[in-house]
Length: 122
Image 1: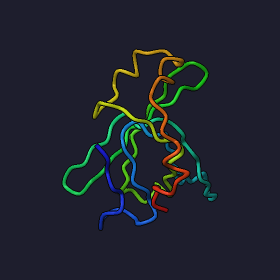
Image 2: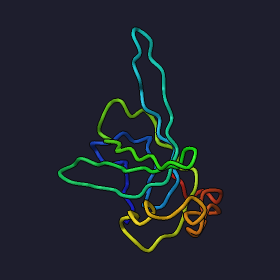
Image 3: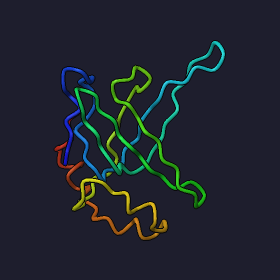
Image 4: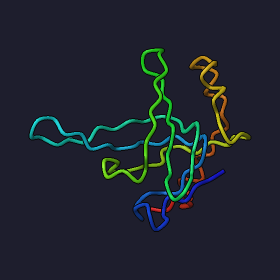
């Protein structure tokens, strides 16, 4: 299941992503009177699309502890989405990765050569 993030609701600079891809998402944070962009890099384990609203659930391991975040792509706080790695999966939702350890998640089939050949939409 792949989702084109270039619909009329989403911004056109977001690439097409699918479940299993490794992405780097930039979120705008306001601290006092300063603004900065915080990046979260992880594997997409679920994509939801309903009524024009799209969301990505991204999971990463930080010091052996799994962290999941839900990103609403229609939010103005989401500044950028970068596709870092493409993997081939056979499921629409990768919730089984929660039970696996960090090394077993590396068994997802890497297809990063597709990124280098120019199939990514910038």
